[in-house]
View 1 (tube, protein in one colour):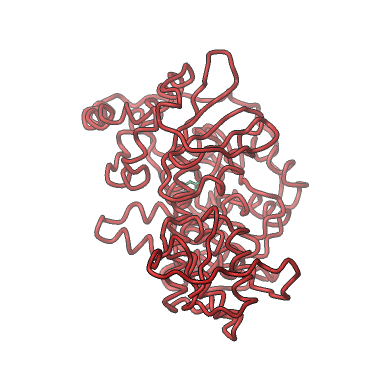
View 2: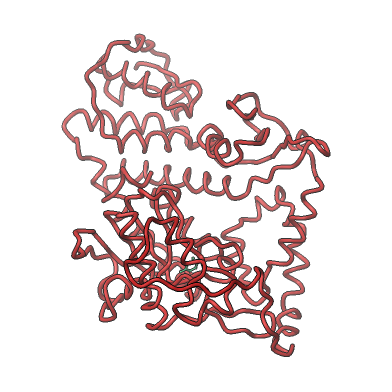
Length: 476
Ligand code: URA
């Protein structure tokens, strides 16, 4: 038995060095004991010779490296050995092993990676920075991840909050950003992070105002925002009372006289809407779409919600239309359907930031009931009127893969005869060579009765997995 150790246990470089040395020495997986693994302490054996500095000539698929980077962040004590077994098999004749989705080692590693991606997603969503001192632009957040993900997620916060000075403390490790570099240090305790700050008041007021009791689904809410994270979230303190009052607030809404919607942005002068093909790049098209009057939906909506994502994204996801939250925020998929889509992306190994997300219809269609705006599906005329904008996005971004989320998006791309129930998950090639498929809309998953929801979600993830395996290099 040969022993080895990965320090720190989540480091891809550290694991890779040890795995390379073991391979070079010809040590089979069953003869290699990874410290921290299940057999720790059972056998004392020789140590692994130092990893050769020279290139071993080993080329492993990029997909394996991505998988390993995620798996290493899991707390599972056997992960180092599992990855080494996969690597051993890959370099010993099973080059396409990762494509065998039912292989027990592949299944086990994929499950660990999915758990890490979920944890990563939760951390991105639930970290809340608090100001250290009034007037000082420095912030601290406390977070308790399930896995060793701090090093993996820290660059995301550095990019997102590049102009702030901040630190994130977790029980096992901390990281500090000074505006230029990330500095990792020891873990902390919750009391090291300040409990409250002035900005929190603003956030709480905002949260209480956007909370829509008519949309309340406590089970889904607990799934998307698990209770274990509530203690770090300032808005969580509001939840018990908001949940308690939801019933009476909905009754009040239903009984209230219908009101004119309050506009969130000033009315704009009408601008001529372009004929198809009249517009230039994405920024110019977006500017023109802000004043679009091609159909009546612009009038009650707050704003045009344009697509977002890199202009050179290889994959474009198309939804139906912005919902209530998107109409207010001016961004696609930021409400409950967006939260579910984010989770499904994570489970399918898709990085949302690498894709372009847009909608077939760019204005929110709704029915006003008192203060509540109930989603109303756009009809074929709205989809037709908006088609010029979608075409413009397709023609400018020129993705090679298009994924339609739901029947409305599918009709905009494939035409009205397209039957989502029969065609979902199947690849088609559009006239311009673009690969396209349609799957269900995340809001449809949310509308399923509880007993059917999990299966509906798994179906969505399965279709997205087909997209990510076809376009893995463009989506991570
Ligand atoms: N549903 C959509 O189709 N698009 C969004 O942006 C949000 C919800």
